[in-house]
Image (cartoon, rainbow, N blue to C red; front, side, top):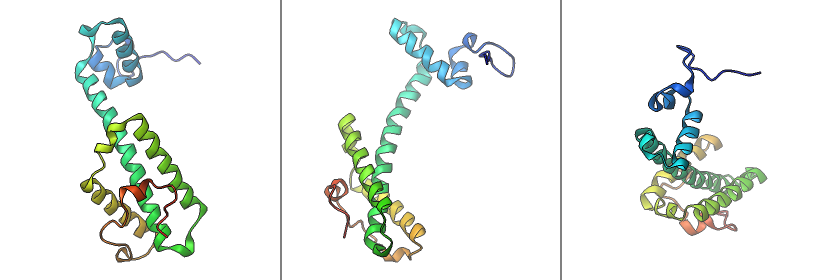
Length: 162
């Protein structure tokens, strides 16, 4: 099936829209056009406003993925430690998978290590603590108020908080 690339409101071909409008109508096509303009060195034709926004969003997505892995590790370590009767291979696999994700993220983007600091650990641990309480149906007071795990333990493939 061949579908025309058009703007559904006024049937203007997406390719003929100004770049700022193309961004709002067809982000994939906009990305392809931006990449092509960059390859050709046509910097004066770039949609810098949206290009800057997308570059910033790319960095944010990297940080979010990194912090999500940390939060999941903390969440599952809490479940593992404080609900031993329900330990599962799935919890262990989640911890191991997210540790691999952390390792890969830090290899690909070493500056992510700057994201992890005491303030971030406090925030992520608080979120993981709440999630663990909800999921396990244990009172939140079951879990320590302060994070019982350090950065080395979060990354340690052999640590499960037994």
